[in-house]
Image (cartoon, rainbow, N blue to C red):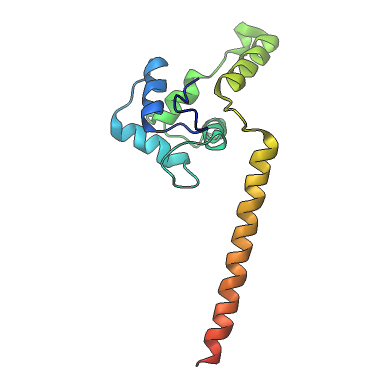
Length: 138
């Protein structure tokens, strides 16, 4: 819905439009800080997993009260006492379907995590091999 570029990411301008539509506009710097706070791969945009990280951080109380991410998470809250458990279930199902990007399935996210772990392990092995070769020259 907010991924107007249909690339599977929320970039700065798409985040700006989203926050305006949610009636919580942010400054340019505020938007950049929102992305920076959860941008795990430092690409300057939000993936589905990074977007979900906002809500995990909010639930854990890790967001500052005055941050744009806190405002975004607060806009997505539901009062179970007035809506009831079934209302909460419907609300969260609707939220997930509204923010779900095409093709961002659990399996793809898991595969991406495994690939990153594999790359980190390969980098670790290359560094160890380099250090071993380097010690031969001392």
